[in-house]
Image (tube, rainbow, N blue to C red):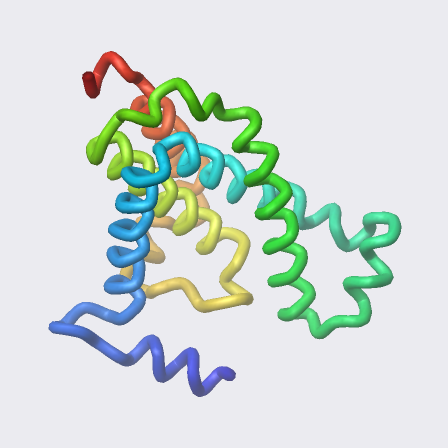
Length: 169
């Protein structure tokens, strides 16, 4: 698996690393998803990513969950725990985010929300998930640990801005 990761990091597309191309692709897909399904779903996803990352350390000592986690390989257990927490936090976030408020924000709202989700993902990836997949070296200085708080707060601010219906109508 280390060979696959190092090979993936060396692949380039028109001079840009495959990681950067993937990040731009994720932003585009999230923008389209937000435009079609509503920006509030992207808001819920953003808060679910933060919530899952905050809850992950508590899973190792959780009653009923810790014996189950111990039976898996560490990487598999980490992916399963984060995936499960992400689903639970997303479903809770859908209930918390008022889906009827500004789902008609259009492409601007969706693009801003998707940009915030990518920023949240990159900030959390660099600070908490580098063991799952190495962080792109091109972005490590920008998303370094001292800036994680500011990236997360900025992304939450962008999510709030994208929810302002009067700005887009």
